Amino acid sequence: MKIIIESGASSWQATINQTPTGQMIFEALPFKCTASRWGKEIYFIIPVAADLEPGSTNIVSKGDLGYWPTGNAFCIFFGATPISEGNKIVAASAVNIFGSIAGDLESLDQVADGDEIYVKKA
Image (cartoon, rainbow, N blue to C red; front, side, top):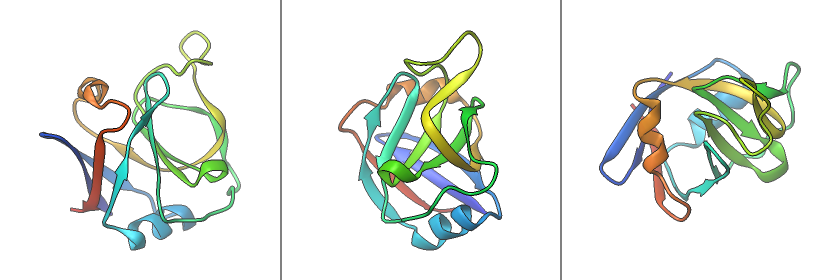
């Protein structure tokens, strides 16, 4: 399942995995949200409520899309967070990895706190 994430004049393509959380998020699209930043993580509250799935983790990879049940948040990981250690990207707590983003991840750094994010099916 393919989606497009837009902010300002920039857009990124992403793939949603066939997981329970991925399916719930895909079915809830489209949505407009307000971005928050935590290091090189963008997150935003979405209208989806899911529990942690087996395999959830707080160690993520660059480009991962995660769902953070604690905050009902869609997370885009593109580098170190404030609690990352060395080359490990560490989320605030466990997330469900439900997809990945493609393309130029460095351009995600242009998204600031308070920017509008629009997520839709491709």
